[in-house]
Length: 608
Figure 1 (tube, rainbow, N blue to C red):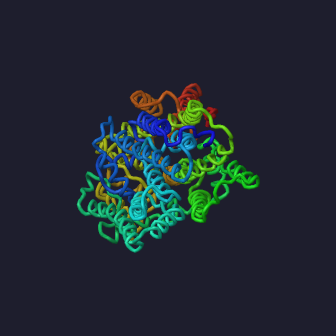
Figure 2 (cartoon, helix red, strand yellow; figure 1 turned 180 degrees about the horizontal axis):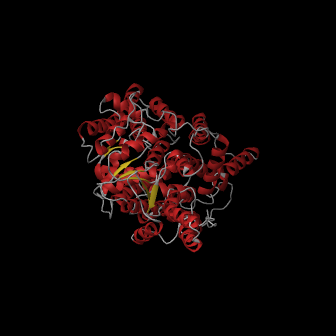
Figure 3 (cartoon, rainbow, N blue to C red; figure 1 turned 45 degrees about the horizontal axis):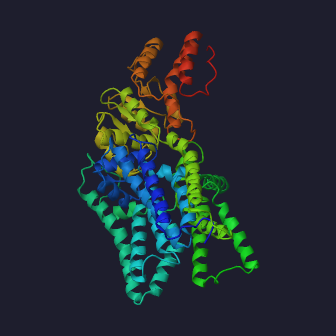
């Protein structure tokens, strides 16, 4: 009996573990935002409401999960999708507990570690809004549980369950392959321990195939039957070849995290990863060091228990290899720049290695506390677990509130308010792409406005969809995407009002325009535009009707922070115009308005 284990296999121990799961579920559900956030969240919230096909590789397991739970009562589709994701996050916490116990950790250490993991910033973030990573963690925790040296199932059903988990994991997120060292170990052990190894292997392979093929068969059915005017369908071709292209992420690069050619920064990525894991898990990775020291001292003192079997030793070595593969090795390959929203993009991929680290920390911590001669009383253990979980929650909660700001959805709604009827809006970035998608398709607002995002234009399906919506041909004679200047000229030629949310090319910044609200109205030769005072009045009236928060985002890498310059832009341009007219009082007033959104602006433009 260890210091943290006064109630092993008792109702008290089971109740403590169950309480953590319930508390995590309550926290995730209570913090599920009603609004759409940045990144891919708008896409999955839309798919929850309308169905369809997500960006490569399609994530069919996640889409089936969302569509199957669309009956959940919620105020908005974004919140309904968040509730569905929260359920996956709760399952991940429960299965992590099962995995810790199966790998030899006792209830006290399992409760402490699972509480820290459940309320860590990253696990909480990924479990309270629609994303694929909470489900990825749930499936990964299932694989870790089934691959334990003391597995929960007999050999034959274990082989089938591992195969099914691997298949569903691959149909949810490709990074599940990073668990191959321990997953293959568990499958091989199950096959060897089976009285009918050939049957066990066949069952495992069959379950794996079913786990992958059936969800992708659903995507194929959607591709063939869905109405693209109602459902969001990101797929290059609606046939088997197109599905395979989608699965292997042909439009991005199978082994590339980002689609753009960016120099890899392994040292910077590894430093960011190490800091995140240590902080998210409240220093629990140090338990590995302490566990190794305690184990070594025990061996020297001759206090070791029965010798560790070769199978168990191999299992722990492969579990460590799984962490290295899914963590440091994978992170070192990232080709996403660590500027702007880059840190928020890459941090989501830390959840998988953090899950493996939590399991390793639970076992190592158990080795450490096993050296204490007398166990703590049950009340003290429960208090320690509550303290650990509470500390994690106190550290995480401000980050969750910041992360769940309505900034992105407010911006999308404000941008649509800025656009006149039947306008065309060019807007870059995933947060704008999927934000407009959600507000227009899932909420049904301002569908008269056509939004063109340059990011997916290299994909033929998107060029065809934009041509159907705008009447503009976005292809070169060779079948590639047109350049930004050609695109602007062709969009202006439609005669519809043309607006940009951001200049997608530096050359466009010289285009004559009026900044109105969050958008820039491109002026043609026949457009006179506003005078300075009239433009200021138009912006004053528009900003009075905007959805605005009482404070600006604090996270400089968050999706919302990237949008603040769009609010400041009309006031800065007005300040420059007043400065050129030597009306410094008006220029200073406009700069003050810009500072409400970008406080770092400190200088009033000098007269020109």
